[in-house]
Image 1 (cartoon, one colour):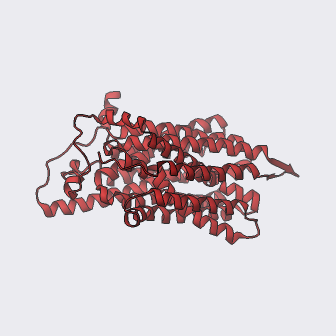
Image 2 (cartoon, helix red, strand yellow; image 1 turned 30 degrees about the vertical axis):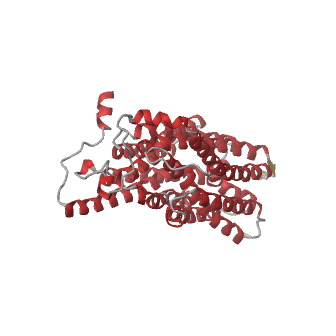
Image 3 (cartoon, one colour; image 1 turned 90 degrees about the vertical axis):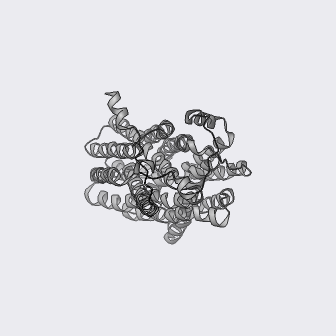
Length: 448
C-alpha cells in the first residue's frame, strides 16, 4: 500500500526534449500560462475551503452550538496542524509530484467541508478541522515550487505577486459568496457549497497544473531564459541544503515577523465579521462585505508587491516592507477605534489594511525568505516560514476567542463585548511585525 502511494506521488519523468525552437516557445508559453492560472485559481479554492467557518461564527453562536472559546479552539486546530503541515509538506514538496500532491490536498479539504455540514459535535469539529489544516498546508508549498520550476529569477517577484492574489480571491468569494449562502440557507450550506467548489478545483488542478518543464519535453527554465541562479552545488544534496536553512538566523527573524503579521491578518479574517456585528451593529452580509473590501484590495497589494519591489526598489523588499508595515499599523488602528457612526471610515481603513496585508504577506510570508535562501530548497523555506506564521495564527484564534468570552456581558439575552484588550493584542502584533523587519535590513540575497 505504501509503495503504491509513493509511486503515485513520484515526479513525472522527463521525456524526450523538443528541439524545434518555435515549438519550444509555443509549449513553454502554453504550459506556463496553464500552471500559473490553475495554481492561482486552485489555491483560491483552497482558501475558500479554509475560511468557510469564519462567516458562520455568529450563526453558530446564536444557535448555541459552541462558545467563543470553543470556536477559537476549533479555528486553532486548523492553524496548528497547518503550521506543522507547512514544515513537513514543505520539505516533501521539493521531492514530489506537485500536480498530484496539490490536487490531493484540495480533494481531502473538500471532503472535510462536506462532512462538517452534517456535524454538530465539538470534538468532531476539532478533529476534522485539524485534518483540514494538514492538507491545506499542501497548497502554498506546491504553488511556490511550481513558480520556481516554471519562472526565472528575474520575473519571479512579479509572478509571485500576481499569483498571491489567489489568497484574496478566495477571501472575497468566502466573505461575499459563502456569506450570502449562509445568510440565505444557513451555516451548514456554507460548508457544503465550499466542499462542492473544492471538488471542482481538484479536477482543474489534475487537468491544467503541471509538474515540471522536463516532464513536458522542455529544458529547465534557467536554460530557456538564460537566467541562471544556481552555483555549482552538486556536492550538496537537496536534503543537506534544506537542513542548513535551520542555522540561518535571518530566516527565523523573518519567520517571527511573519508570525505577527499573520496574527493581524487572521484576527480580521477570523473575527472581523463578528467584531463589526457585535461592536458596530452591522448585519452578517454587511459585515462580510466590509471585510471583503480588505480582500479585494489585498489583491491590489499582492499583485503590485512584486512589481513595486522589482521595478521601483530593484528587487529589494525591505524598504517597501517597512512602508507597508507602517500603513498596516495606521489602518488597523483606525478600523478598530473608529466609532460605529462612520461606516465610510471602516470601509476606507479596510482598503488600506487590505493593500498593506497583501504586500506584507507576499514579502514576509515567503518572498524575502526565498531571496536569501538557496533556491533548491524553496519548499523547505516556505515550510519554515509557514509553521511559524500559522502557529501565530493558531495562538491568535485561541487568545482572541478567550478575550472575547472573558470580556462579554449578556443583558436580556443579548451579548456585548469590550474589545479593549483585543485591540491592544491586534495592534501590538502589527507593531512587532514591523519592528522585526528592521533586524534583517542589510541581509543579502543568496544566489545558490
